[in-house]
Image (cartoon, rainbow, N blue to C red; front, side):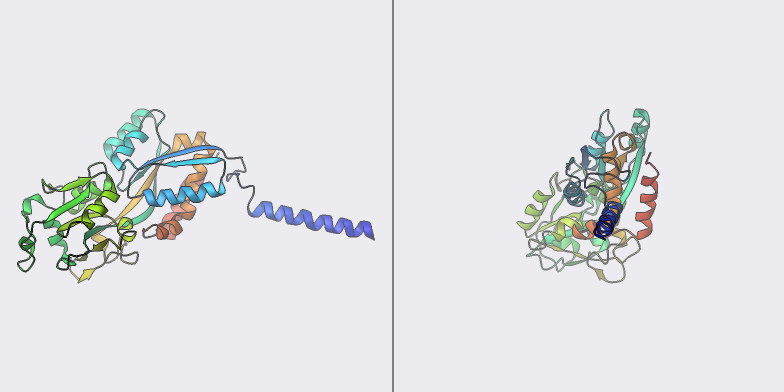
Length: 317
């Protein structure tokens, strides 16, 4: 009887161990069961940086033998580091890859996989003491940031606005956010010559927060994390003023004209050679919706996430 009891207990313990292995596996195992170690190197968009930094932190909490390095040189500068011999594993981007960048990848023999990770809204921000420009039409926003419109003073925008000089701010040409403003919103028309363009988003937040006549633009996440310092302009696209939020930032939503997808681009060659690089890609898409909401982005649809996962899982050996 005792031996039977011991055998029964052993069988139960064995079953529990098998179940646990099926549910999780080792902490440092990838999707194929291999031990993961090494590094993952990411650069690119400052807009996407908070999303990817949080993702990396979460991932390293589960994969203690993998180091994920996330930098933020800007979308365009990041692509230069990505599309190079021994380049980065990923480039975060607040715009899609350009034809000349695709050509560079082909020249180098780098297979590139686009991963759409979240949705962002270009947010027009003003100083907390600005109580006159809290609501603007889409055309008024464009005119403020168009050199050709000649809106030098607030009273040039509306007669009842203060007769004070407008101070415009934004990210510099290294950033996809600048390119989205220039190419999509302003339709490739020049920004004001005296606009103050900065590399670092925290600098932009500081400058606008200290200048009553300031107005700037950047991604929604940087506004959301600095609501105590800045106000967001409600933009009227024709059906009444719309405040940017996780509910309105959608490709077919009320804030659609200023909404854009954001991406990370994967070096497929590296993903095929380094299991941790591919594992990180799959982890990112499995957790994209939660991390997006935690870092000031609107989440993707289930269909978009699954489409990326299907592609990434197809890269497994």
